[in-house]
Length: 528
Image (cartoon, rainbow, N blue to C red):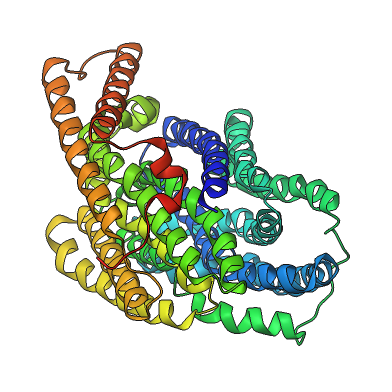
């Protein structure tokens, strides 16, 4: 099983890497055009709200409830029943999303006031942030419809993944990045405020992603006329699983939105600093964590339907081992070389304007977020251990605890270290979330980490420490500050190559081979 998962995971990671690289290019364009000031704060605010709802309703709740039911129907009833179920799910979800989107567009000032309360209060009293509220209300009318398109993309992507067409869904986000970049470059000068061009890019990107996947669904024979079926037994089952799932795997997104609400009340640029830092964290998270999570949920769902308990445990253990293998060195690397990465990607044009050192500010947030990087990845692997068994109640309980802890950490840290406190609070709550997910899986007898994986983790930590020592030495020998962009790119490439060579060489010297990652049977699950 894991050999096939490894191949699928590599395909998803490769497609995701293309998307993430394009995403970083997009963010570099945004940083160059808008900087980290008022316009950037407002656009990122207007873009984050539909993205939050997308991850909550589509990728977070709907996908986690939909995939196990879809896999079960496919295993037990065949393609004809799947075709009917997909049409019912698309019709029901599409109808609800259309209504939500219309409400969001018409009520954009209310949404802007709800999530940007301090801006609304300033607008009401004629304060200095009044312009932010007006602009946010206008931009939401363009960005909110993205929720409709991308949620249907998540549905079609889930169907493609269950049929092992992982590359299509993984490549689709590239179209959003191309759309935003194109609109930013072509339409930026057509508006008094360049943020409008980016908002139009978000709208067109959502439409492009939706249209792109339709031919692949048709090729599978799964493109049927949508049918509203609120009371269909399968749709009812998804609905019951979906509600608690909103607070399960999507907890990190809820935490990020709460951070945005609080950051809106902090100094100007706080939202932008957190956004750019989050984008850097999302690169390894999307490349490795989400890549493995994408392939592991359908696999676990099929194993549960077949009642393959031992293979279910081995697959979970393989997923944990894989994200640890890549997550620990990624965490160390980001902490040490994030200033150079930020300078290369964003340190140009408007980003360097203003009273703040934006490179240093974003780097601080990256370091704070990096504390929880491995935990973010583990959540992506451990949560499917519940969802594959159609258990969404347990993650919701854990999610509520994690959210409460996040707010507590926010209140404890933000008054003293500002936006850095928000980033650190998110990381700490994610660590608590991952720990509680594992504890519950262990108590339920579903999964207990093997001795093999514990020893493997120790090797990853030791290799990462050696890698970190080399990076610290290189930073002292080759200072990048004050150099031109080409020199900085060369120094960044040198550090990345050195880090990769040192880490993988150390792992090889300690006996780690490719077979360790490809085959879960190489690590029999035994009590730790």
